[in-house]
Every structure is written in C-alpha cells, then in structure tokens.
Image 1 (cartoon, rainbow, N blue to C red):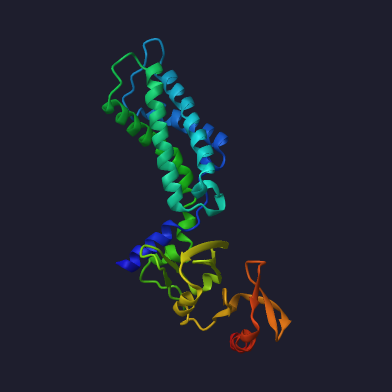
Image 2: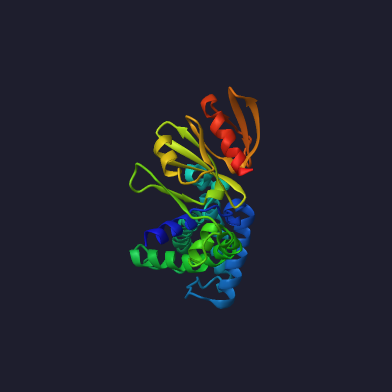
Length: 290
C-alpha cells in the first residue's frame, strides 16, 4: 500500500506540460469563450434565466465574454506565486489545483454577472452563490479538460506512470529507489537510470534527475553521508567529493590528474569534482563500468 501511494504521488508530481489556457491566457481565454458559448448555446446544460429585453444567446454571450476576466487574472496571479511561476516545473498536480482555483474564480465572476444579465431577484444567498459556482465548474471544466487531456500522453510515457498503471510490469533491470528524509512526511523516489548527481546544500541534499528528457531538481532534508548510505547498494553511485554523489554511468568526460578530477555529466554542464583521495577508487569503478 505504501509503495502504491508513493508511485501515485510520483505520478502526480512528475513533469507535465502547462495547460494552454494558462500558458497563453489571452488567446486561451478567447478559445475558452468560444467553446463555452457554443456548448451552452447548443446543449443548454443548465436552466438559465435571462432578462426579457435580451435573448438567451445574448445572455450566454455576456457570460462567456465575462469569463475571460477571471481566467486572465488567475493566469497572471499564478505566475506571481513561486509554486506556480515556472512553466518548466509544472506538474499534473499543479495543473489540477490551478484549474480548480480558476473555475472557482469563474463561479464567483458568474455570480456577480448574473445581477446585470438576469431578471431582478433575491440573489444575496449562499444557495444562489453555490449554484453559480457549480454551473461555472460544470461548463468551464470542458475547455480546460480538452487542453489537459491533449497532454495525457506525458503521464503514461514516464517510467513512474507505467509502473503505477502496470504494477506487474517492472522497470527493466531497475528497481525504484526510495530516499528517506529526516522529515517523516518527506520522501523521494526515482530509478537508478534517472539519477545524475546529488549535491549537499546545508541541511538539504539536492538531487538532479533526468525525467522525461528534462533535468529536474528535487531536494530532501538529510545529510549527504546518510544519502550515501541509502545509495550504497548501487555500485556505480559514488561519493566523489564531500558534497557530491555521482552516477558514474553519466560521466561523459574528465579532466585533471591524480590531484583531482573535474567531471562533465550527461544532461548538465556543471563540473563535478573528484577529490584527490577519491581518484584511485574512481578510476577502478570506471574500469568496471567501461
């Protein structure tokens, strides 16, 4: 059960392309308006009251145009929040949270637009407010879902996703590594082939992983010595320096002499040091790999 929970969490937090509506809010909001207007006009999914002087189509058009405001505002606001600001660090979990927050904003906006579009009625009550939010969610989830669904292939193409949805099919020749933290609720999982190197940074260790052909940084609270012990079962993982642990299979070049080396690894231009006392062991392990 714990293993499946870990896999599910890894699946949720893996790299995922950002929804087009968030990435291009102005163009995305126009597409959103068109889809919502067309769908609502044709299928009439909710009972809509409109003022006697305007048609049903005009009423829906006003709602659709007004929906662009919270979408653009939410997209701009998300970029100001550190957790959501970087597109390259976007995950499926962030996608879900961002969509839900935006749909809530849409519901609030639709609630106030109704005061201008629909006939006068007692609207200052929770029932009307929640009904407005529900209708906005049911209609707005369609265009958001279309753009999210177009990227679903990224969820099923990674090793973590395949292992979760096909638990009987293990990753060839590799077992999932689980790294423990000094914080009880914090943990990290990856396959040996995804690991490039780890760097000690104060009370944390930063892991550099290659996932879906992208380099991702994952930090966990622990000491580099404890991490070294946890990775000791992998023969080609070596602590080359007091602050670095390296996947020797990722080494593409080295320079230096017996006083120390500087390594270049696949996927990164950062030079990783090999201290003088570790050069002998480094040479021995590299011979066994090649």
